[in-house]
Structures are given as structure tokens and as C-alpha cells.
Length: 344
Ligand code: AHM
Ligand code: MG
Image 1: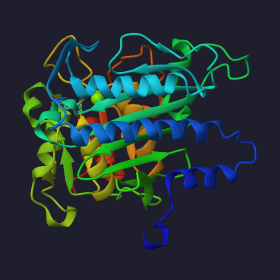
Image 2 (image 1 turned 180 degrees about the horizontal axis):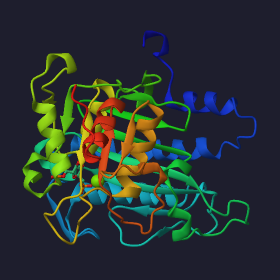
Image 3 (image 1 turned 45 degrees about the horizontal axis):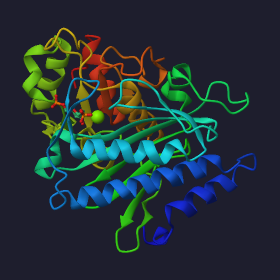
Image 4 (image 1 turned 180 degrees about the vertical axis):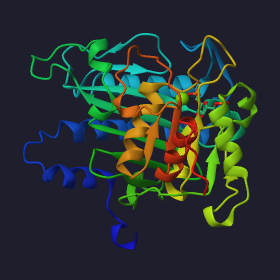
């Protein structure tokens, strides 16, 4: 880490683009604009307790959830900055029903999907929250600049050009991948720069932590219940029992598991018949984090074993069951769901 200290995120992005002579600098420009938005949100999150921005905005979002003021601030910050940055042709946000057009004359070749403030139910209690983003090249990148459409956004996760998140915690960190490993940057608030602090992040292959909302146990499939019971059994040889770690803020749970190892599960459940696929959204949460975890050596699947990054979205706000984290632990989950538990 000491060798990397002092490398700013902008320099890191430019250095990696230099390895690609065909690069036009547009992706670097896009990421730089997102970083400015992230710094703006970070400053507001840090001031939230003082700036009368906690609490509800009085609105309800597309998911039927009450919108917090900070959610709205984060959404507007990203939307406004990115609409005129000149690098994207269309956006979609977890907070908005429809696609978000860009400013006329600013159409670029990329698309952006984002969750402006994930885990926002935790805002008022000072728990870490985050922004998640996903970037694709538009489907018809060769046509003259024009507004993108929904089809440009409904692409599978494996086609992402870049994905990442910014976590607003005890410090602000940005973790992202452009398909060449995962790198983490920590914001030095005194100079307003992100510095490379976690180069080439790898998730431990096997962990001792699981993250799941056990309050939903009665609504799970038998295989999910058996797997969690298995993790709680005592067996020193396989490092069990595992410990439970659940913040209820996906970016935070994911970030911890990326560093320490762990498996996060939000499975299908029968709690609400209108939401049979759990709670998390494919475009804004599952696919970008799946891209990151795969780049870090882990796995991300649905609870019936489909690779998250292979799913072709059928709608902007599609929900998907998610099992994500250390490879061994996701493999083991899959065996339970297939009824093929190994007795060891
Ligand atoms: P949000 O995008 O509205 O904040 O909702 C997603 C959040 C995730 O951060 C977290 O993993 C999950 O909801 C927690 O859900 P639950 O409270 O059902 O455990
Ligand atoms: Mg979210």
C-alpha cells in the first residue's frame, strides 16, 4: 500500500487508458465526472446532521418507497452533472420510473445506470451508505450521436465497461473496475482527492461471515434455510460456525465482505407475492456488484444458480435474487440449492 500512496484516481485512470492506444479518453472523462458527483454527495452526507437534509422529502419513488431528502439530493446531483457531461446518451436511476435523457447536443456513446444512495433507510442513524454505478457502451455505438433508449440500458452485466461504488462511511471510498481488476481509492477530504489505497483487491476464496436478513427466514426456500443452518453448525475443520454480519446497507455489507471475505444473500422469498424475487435490483445493485466481485475472484449468482452477469434484463427496475461473495461459499450455497450438500 505504501508504494501506491499518492496515486490519484485520475492518474490511475489515465495510466490504465494509456495501455489501450485505441482509447479515446471518453471513459476517463465519464469517470472523472462521476467522481465529482461522488465528492459532492460525500460532502453533503458528511454535513447531513447539520444541514437539515435528514428525514423525508415527502415524495414516493418508483419502488413505492418514501424518498429521503439525501436520496433526492444524490439523485439530482448525478443526473444533472452527467446529463451534460457529453459522454453518455441515456441514464436510468433506481429512484426514477423512466429513462433519463441527456442534454441535447451532449450525447455520447455510453449509458449509465445508478443507485444514487443505496441503504438510505440507514441515513438517519449514521450508518454507511453508498452510490452504485454501472456503465455500458450503447448498443449502436457506431451511429451518429443521438439520445439513447431503454434498449441501450437493458444489457447484460458481463457487457459492462465499468462498474463500481462509492461508500460514504468512516471515510469515503471509491471502488471500481474497468475489467482489469478492482481498485479502491480513499478520499482525502483535506485536498478533495481520491488516492489509491487498495490496489488490485481480491476477495478471500473462503470466508467465515454470512450476511442475510434472518428476519425473513420463514419466507425462504428450504435450501436457503438448510444452508444457513449448515453455516451455524460447529465443525472446526471447515471453519464453522460462521459469524453473522448484516448491516442492511448493501454497499456496506458488500464492501466488508470484499475485504474480509463473506457471502451476502438476498434470496427469493414469499413475504410479498408482488416481489417474489427478493428486494434487490438487477441494473442498479446486483449486476454492478457482480461485475466487481468476479473481477476480484468471487462469484455472484441467483438462488437457482444463474450467473448474475449473464442475465439479460427485461425491464429497468427488475428485481433479482442475489448470492454474492467468496467463491467457496457461493459454490456451497449452490450445492445446497441443488440438494447436493457435501458432508465435510
Ligand atoms: P435501497 O436501495 O432502497 O436502499 O434498498 C436496498 C437495501 C440494500 O442496501 C440492503 O441490502 C437491503 O435493502 C436491505 O433490505 P432488508 O431491510 O429487507 O434486509
Ligand atoms: Mg439500493
